[in-house]
Length: 412
Image (tube, rainbow, N blue to C red):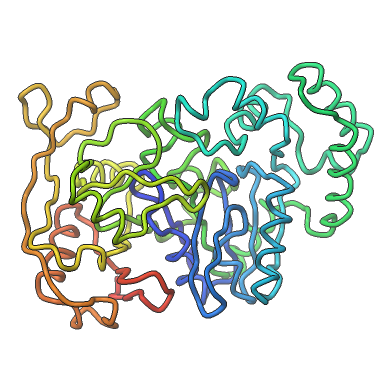
């Protein structure tokens, strides 16, 4: 059985959580390999709506083990709160394995983010994720494995208090030691566990956070996240070679959104953009901030495909486009008067990009009632086929509503 990577193909918020939860009904393991509580993966099923920040979306199924790999920046307090919220919904407690090599987000990381002003300047989620990854790279981070040594924990926090200030280390040390006592039997060698599952023929889903255009290297730098968000992040954040990944599913909305600052060529600041925002409930699951909205950008989507080599696409929120007289799609850019299909590395060049649109016919009717491709209006089917042909990747999953059953599996 395959390793399956579910990767955001835009600027995040593509409904990866819903896609992962749908696929994980037949999976044995679901692995988060990057990001931290800045992720907001929403799942709507018979238990209600779960907004996940650390727990893998697939782990909501009792038969699917959830793994937080070493590439995840783990906030212990957020994880405990999230598990309490899931319990309040009367869900089975997720079977979790936490990588002993995962770095921790600590209270002073949030302080650093506020002191440096990066939250406002870059539009981050104010969760301390960036400073935690910075400490990791600077070799001064605290990992889950370290919590078994109380003296080391206290030394680390006292040193951080001298460097950063603004917090009292001993109470935080006590909290971390309490967390270690609670989760000791769930902290271990995640990389080997994942490798063993794959070798045994188990189905393992790798759940990406954020999206390709927010990747630290391939995204719209510096308006990016602090981790690897592409399929290559599976190696970076889980220690598993990408040759173990047989399916790479790129998740894209039927339109485009972005949270925070940075260039966004197809953004619509007029009535159409507001209609997309309201129709798609485009408000951040982590921050509650309204998302910037615009038309589907095929230049960016083809760029994401070149990086990830998607084997298939999941096109979500097709229902939000229902009722529009026409649907616009960006097929190229015009930069400084020249037409191009290249996605620039320079954010100043990207900011000058003017979208070249093609108008496709709209459709009427409530597509949320569709349960097969044939149930969709002809214009909606044409739209899906147009996207697949333009990117050169088949669309195998179509989202027509927020609930897990509102997903059309149209085959590979």
